[in-house]
Amino acid sequence: GNLCLSSCPGKKVRLSGPVRGRAAINRDLDQDFERMKGYGITMLVCCLDDTELEFLGAPWPKYEKAALAHDMKIIRLPMIEGGCPKTLSEVRKAVLQVNKEIYNGHNVLAHCRGGVGRAGLFAGCWLLENLLCRSVERTVYILRERRSSKAIETYAQAEYLIRYAMALN
Image (tube, rainbow, N blue to C red; front, top):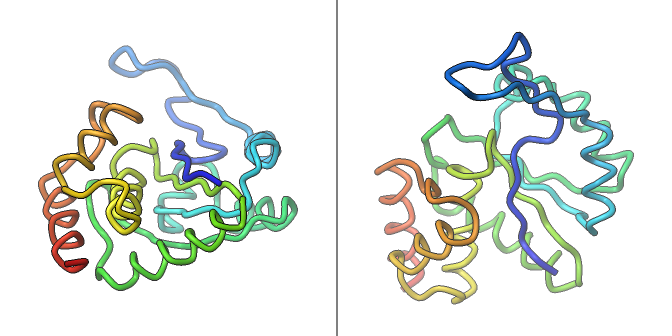
């Protein structure tokens, strides 16, 4: 299986029209879950809290119901925008759960609002944990090459990756 990154399923922003040249986004939660199921996604790592899910138009009760309807497990790893998880151990626990799913041939999707910063941070920890990258610099390079040039958006996120890598050694 694979670890995939995405923006929030069912995301709805700027519905009144473009803001600073950025168009409206009006995704359908059920269609997004149906599409994810089609890609073999069986587990989600949601890096958003209930408040942000609600703000994005995917309130937790609807999100959870859609996931259950599509037989998807959910790992909650909420972080504030630009932020990091509170502990290294909670991420390591999530990474190990994701590994079990991937080793069983299933795909896992990690997301935040845009699938770049917080989800990218989780993916970076996953890359380091599985020795797919042996340095933080290489990890950030791969994330920026594969997902977005903005992946790992803040100094705090870069510092977290460094602490995660140091804890592995």
